[in-house]
Image 1 (spheres, rainbow, N blue to C red):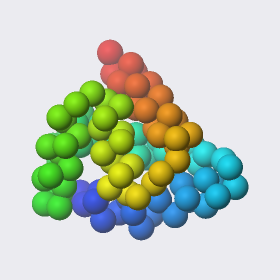
Image 2: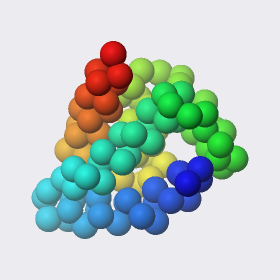
Image 3: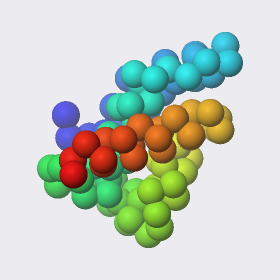
Amino acid sequence: AMDGTQKQPIRIVPHVKAFSERGQVAKGATRAIAGWVLHLRGVGAPVDDKAAVELVEQANAGDLAAAVSVALDYLKVDDASVAETVLAQAEEMLAMRR
């Protein structure tokens, strides 16, 4: 399960987009994206995904909100409600680590 760049678009994004089309947010799926964003930023195990080298660099170039934007751009998810939810969930996960 090291290749998030491959798994997120196939396993998570379809649910996010299906809910978005109905004006809803798939909070379970967005939580997976939030965890992936934190992983890209160095939280937890080191990233072992050769396709994520540039994403890791971009995700660490700014603040957490910028990292969420980088990840959602990569995943081709363009929904402000999803972005807000992913950011809030990532912040919540970080707070639980303290």
